Each structure stands twice: as C-alpha cells, then as structure tokens.
Amino acid sequence: MSPNSFDPTRIRLSPGELRGRVIAITGPTAGIGNALALECARYGAEVLLLGRNVKKLETVHDAILALQAHDGGAIAAPAIAPLDLEKAVAQDFDTIARAAQERWGRLDGLVLNAALLGQPMPIEEYDMPTWVRVMHVNVTANVALTQTLLPLLRASNDASIVCTSSAVGRKGRAYWGAYAVSKFALEGFMQVLADELEKSTVRVNSLNPGKARTQMRRQAYPSEDINTLPNPATLTPPFVALLGPQARGVTGCAFDAQPASSSSSSTGT
Ligand code: NDP
Image 1: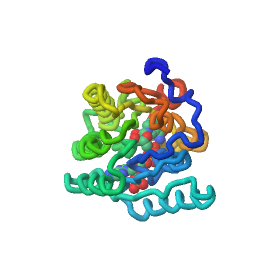
Image 2: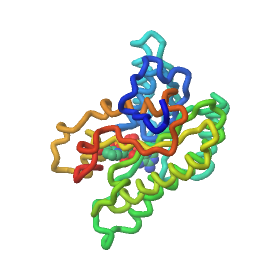
Image 3: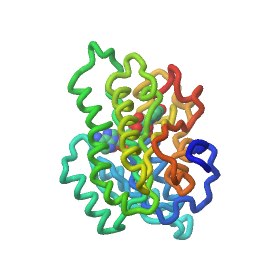
Image 4: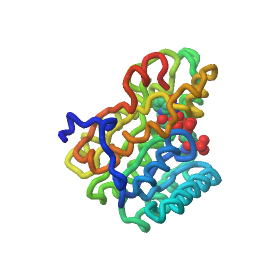
C-alpha cells in the first residue's frame, strides 16, 4: 500500500500484528493510553509503561500479566519505568534509555499519549503558570523523551513514533488555550522530525483519537453524558496499525481515528 493511500482505520490487523516489537507508551495508567497498552500487549508487543504513578503502573502491569495467564503465554510481560513528564530532568530520560538499551538494545515504537488539558479559558485571561505546565508536559517533555530514545528507535529495523493529537490541534478553537496550542506544536514536531528521519527506518505520524470516554474528556465537558462516548478500547486499532509493519514507509502524516463528524467540530478534545 502506498503511503498516500494508507488509512489506519481500515487496516486489517492480524492477531500477532505487533509480535516481537517493543513499544513504549506514555500515560498508560488511564483512558486511551491504558486501553492502548493492553491492546498492544494483546497484539504481541512487549510494552514499556511510562507513567508518573507507580501504583497505577503496577495495576496496568498486573492487568497485562492477567491477560498473559489467560492467553497461555502468547502475551509478553510488560516493563515499568516511572516518568513524570512535568518534573523529569535529563537524567530521568537517560535512566529510561539506559534501561531499555540494556534490556532490548532497541525500541520499535513510542506513543506520545500522556497530556494535560489545562483550563478552558480565553487567551486574554489564561493563567501563565498553567500555560507553561501544559506546554511543558504536552510538548517539551515529549520532545526531550523522543530525543533521548531516538538512538534506540534508530536501532530498530522498523520503528514508529505516534504523536497523540487532537481536533483542536489542527484547527484552532476559542478557549482551548495552551492545550490547543500544544497540540499544534506536537503536529509541528511530528512534521519536522518525520522530515529529518525521512531516509531512516523511523517513521513519525500523528493520530487524533477523537472524543473518548476518559477523565480528560470529563474535565473538558463536565455536563456531558460521558456514557454516550466511545470506549477508548474501540479507538486503539488505528494506533496498532500505525505501530505495526503495515505502516512501514508511512511518515509525516496526520490521521484521525474517527470520522471527522464524530471527532472534531465543536465537540473535540
Ligand atoms: P486521560 O486524562 O484519561 O489520561 C491521561 C494520561 O496521561 C494518564 O495516564 C495520566 O497519568 C498521564 N499524565 C498526565 N500528566 C502526566 C505527567 N505529568 N507525567 C506522566 N503522565 C502524565 O486522557 P485521555 O486518555 O483522554 O487522553 C489521551 C490522549 O488523547 C491525550 O494526548 C489527549 O490530548 C488525546 N485526546 C483525547 C481525547 C478525548 O476525548 N479523551 C480527544 C482527542 C485527543 P495519571 O493516570 O497518573 O493521571
């Protein structure tokens, strides 16, 4: 399939789609990242869980081990690495890279999923300390993490970086403040890095999951009936498709996990 016609929502995934791949995911302790971590494990990946709360990481770790017990060993045990994107310094990123180097010598996937919503607020009134926090977690820390892990991704013969985007990071919308601007920046990062890595074995794309039944969505739309929204587990196949071998050669592209009518307009996150 040519990169131009690749649509991650239309890929038929095989049961072993991610077998043999090592995939790092930020924010695997809730929402979309949690659903994705379990799904990557189900599709055969060895998952590196990067999160700020060790107890929650252990819960995800145990959930994957439970899948493993159920599936008779076809599922690989995950690894855990504590990482608070707000507080991490260079040494913390290096520690993760060193541990991954020692354990696997490479990484085949990196999903930049963890994010902060900040406050829905007009730019004129936006609280600057919150702005800095959101931009740091959603952009700068992702760039630093990617930069540190890049040698490991380059060591793979088919690596994929997926930047988790948003409808408001592709078309600006009033009151979405730092969150929207941070997602625009992540899209820009994706394009710059994809161009720089064009001749390498590392591809870089963005994926907007669209609205999903998660804590972030609840925070953005407190009066909405969250039960009417898609379960995050239903939105993971396009992520898996981008991480797997069928997306080889596809880079620098912005994708949507749901049709535009259900993921953007006035209801995006
Ligand atoms: P949730 O709020 O449900 O989960 C966010 C995850 O990010 C949690 O695991 C959280 O960890 C982690 N996280 C937050 N701050 C940090 C930090 N400082 N360091 C490390 N991890 C951190 O979000 P969603 O699942 O809804 O969103 C996932 C992605 O999808 C985000 O990038 C979001 O922008 C995007 N998205 C979501 C949409 C939606 O409708 N839900 C729509 C469009 C895009 P902890 O568990 O410790 O809190």
